[in-house]
Length: 189
Image (cartoon, rainbow, N blue to C red; front, top):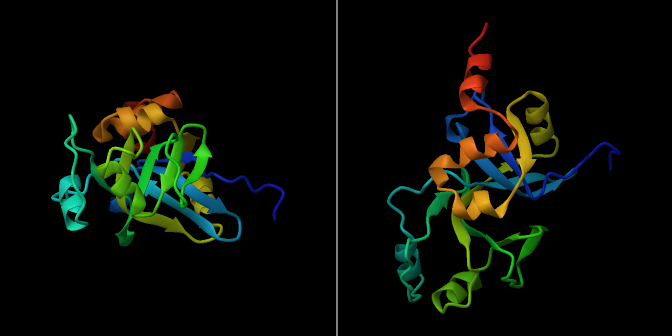
């Protein structure tokens, strides 16, 4: 391992205005895995999966749906593994495939968590993301050095209590960055 490598697992990536991939325009990504040799994987946490509803997924899996005050959002977690579901959730729930990188945020990939949600035994707060974003070894670090992404600490308030359409601006605000100022800096030749 390189002495300078620092894992970004459990952090947020915030897309800069100069990103050249429309799929990540104003994206906020929770980094769920990051190693020097294997690269990184993360979940976009601010892109709704249009026309895909949580209750439909539960019905498709033949699981009862417990009505919530607000139906949980289904998000597009990224352009790869689109048929795979990832659940970011509050840390009081632990299953056999649960990974915890942050004191109050965990990730579970097994279908069991949806069964537990259907019976009221699941996590109190969660996000269901379909698909993920991936980087080969060294690619994410190169993109950060090229000013494609800003990084900040993840927090449960942003993940579970901030509407997805406000997450990019809110994540920038944690760094003291104002979106209008950011765009004006990138608009100069």
